[in-house]
Image 1: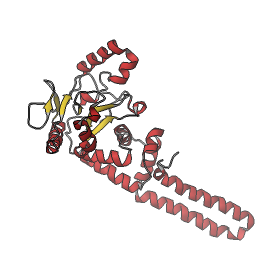
Image 2 (image 1 turned 180 degrees about the vertical axis):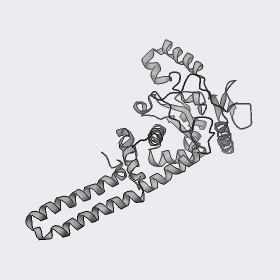
Image 3 (image 1 turned 135 degrees about the horizontal axis):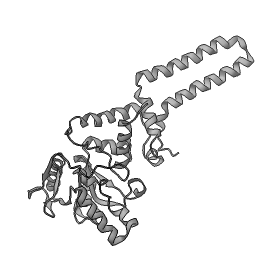
Length: 295
């Protein structure tokens, strides 16, 4: 493992190692001098007591250790060394905000990818149609977003306007049926293997959640445009996260899409940037594993 490994998650294992070391020394000393047995036994009990005390102080550290150990090696390598208490405090900020999300719909942190799906009948509860406005440009008719995502888009677009940038929205919510037709189209054009890299199968697209946007011309030049450069610098300040970064196709399942952003909220963007190498997939996988953890 590299210096960026999750050393902080093995705090308990380190402590256990200390205890094991004490046991080893106890055996060695006992062979040399049985008179010291009682003293060394007391030392061992003191170390065990210290371990138990730390667990009592924050039992979530043990859970954190187990959840992070279950993550992929590449995810672990992305997580910097740090204080587990600080990590947990940041995590709980993110999870506490979840209680303010619409409770009749999927969470903004819902993990959807090639392995995690939604049904063909799923439609976000509070979709709003994007109308012509003074904040951002709509590149085609009949575009919809979840209401909370549209409000965040409007806030971000207003900030961009102040910097002389007009954001342009090209694709938003897609129904299961729409995604099915789109995926089949790309299969007919490029073949199945290439289509899998370019387009999501129905039920696995972030667009079906109503919180994802394709901006601009939807091509690889977007990040070099004024809009793209502004988004890369500022989107996270308004809760928007790049979903499919360059060099992570083996993680996300899709090639680089510099135009595709998902709304997850400001705190989640901070959490992602601070602890997960700014990779959305790693953070969402961790939150999913944390919430579904069982002893």
